[in-house]
Length: 103
Image (cartoon, rainbow, N blue to C red; front, side, top):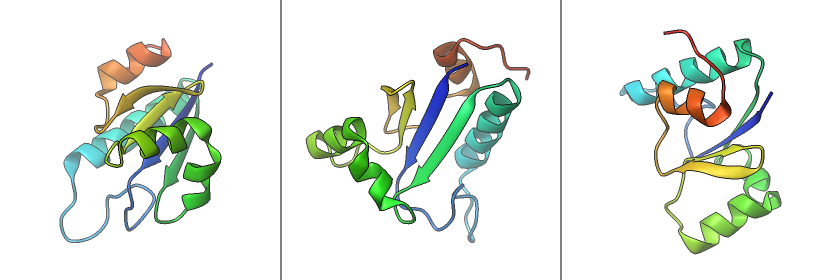
């Protein structure tokens, strides 16, 4: 199964679904990642404000940030960037990792 890494911009909590104004796309994406985990994928999520070293230590992410400071969020599948500046839809995620996700 694929290894998925998500590099989120600085947020108040790991999922970004806290505070007075919740972004529904973040809640949807968190749900989609859970579905990928249930399907057998390995999912790791990094938050710039809580785990900045992960952004520096990953050469692919560090290079992307150096080239384009506003590239976050980044989604990597098996070490390759498959999405940037936006969270992919459930259908796009399923296609990118080659698994069927139930609605």
